Amino acid sequence: MDASSVSFDAAAFREHIKTILDRHASAFDVPEERHALLCRQIANGDDIHSRRTFPGHVTTSAFILDAKGGKILLIHHRSLGRWLQPGGHYEAPEDLAASALREAVEETGMEGLAIDPWHRASGLPIDIDSHRIPARPERGEPEHWHHDIRYVVRARESAALRPDLREVHGAAWRELRELEAIAPHALRNMRRLGLAAP
Image 1 (cartoon, rainbow, N blue to C red):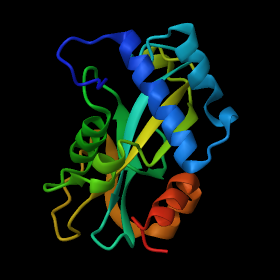
Image 2: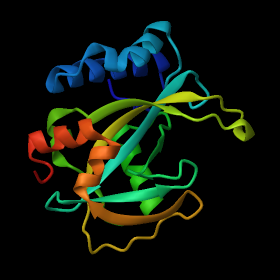
Image 3: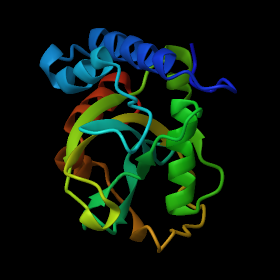
Image 4: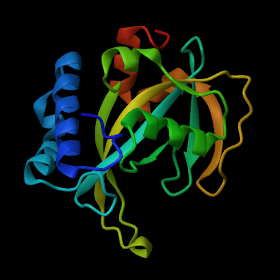
């Protein structure tokens, strides 16, 4: 099942995410406890596709690499005040990879971005990470979790950057090693597969 069907089925989406979780865990030796909260929400029948679902919901993000996999494009996140990969809330009934690509384009303004072919061949994300997001009372959002499904996106370094300054303070090409402090599991997986420079 793919979440890109015209009518959206929340139960089928949960099953789709559970299948991806299981296949990803098997492919990358992920310990069961790393996704315990997301698995519990799936078992409880939570609408994990909706940003109004707490304690957590699905987001997607993109690790934008240059052709050689030696540099990564990061955005300076306005609300979190950190350099991170572009990403945001999943919008049903979008395909998960398409959601990550949309966020990458929206936040960087770059043209010619493409999901790495490895994802098509494997049917897997490069990483799945659940992380805590601070409360935003002005939006009626308590502290909660983002279950972030992550993809590698390829870009031409020469493509113009036009970051959306309503969302981000800026965007810049950074050294790949900076990902060690942001998403170490993703970096390990990319290197293991030869998608990023060692």
